[in-house]
Length: 289
Image 1 (spheres, rainbow, N blue to C red):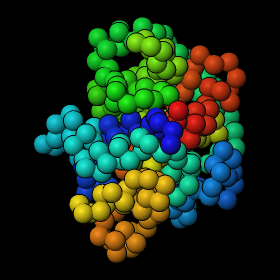
Image 2 (image 1 turned 90 degrees about the vertical axis):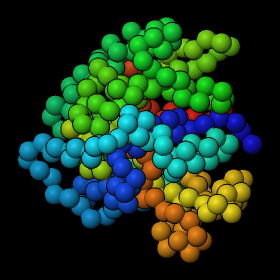
Image 3 (image 1 turned 180 degrees about the horizontal axis):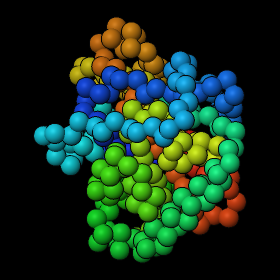
Image 4 (image 1 turned 180 degrees about the vertical axis):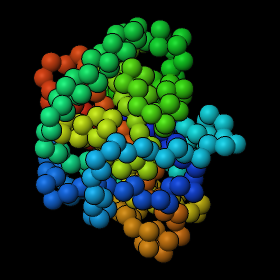
């Protein structure tokens, strides 16, 4: 079995809402004009109830963060996040029932210019950290440094907190590095958004005609006496398990979480072609070694 970890798993750091909020669905605002997610090899499940577009920019509700420490807000003390982090370490995942993606919309006036501004800001931010030691000195932390990965996430808690409230393209939540020996080579950046963001809100951050955000869904946490069933090619639990619904999860004695991480998107600002800059393949299934 291949070793590695899906890059999105670093978003265990970004389950930015209290545990109770994990039972809340993330509303979509898809319309009949939305195009299907072309990069997905499987049908991506999502809420089919459309939300009418608003003429005014939508504001994401601020998460309830009273009484929470920074690790709490980043989701590090969440049992589901911890399990998801481990359950994806030894398996290849596709965009099936445990992942949903935004669909590509039609290009609107101003979308390309807005996306280009994000790429420019991402490149500016990334250029500061071509030396990974500078990133470490500036508050970024390596996620799972001892687990072999195709891309390592260096995550900034302060920027993760900021991303839960507003989008600042000059402050990527994570920096993406490839490792060679004991050194790290910077490849790109990752931006995040709260899990309760609807698609209009994601579009306000980075146009959905350019970028496809993704999120990890339908996690069934195994009961204590069945943790071994979250591993292997016939896993029932976890983010690669066969259980994908709340009813089936509860019937198996598990704990169901509709969405375990926040929304996320990778940007590779040093690439030249748009398809490479906004590569969906690099941010999902091909992150395995």
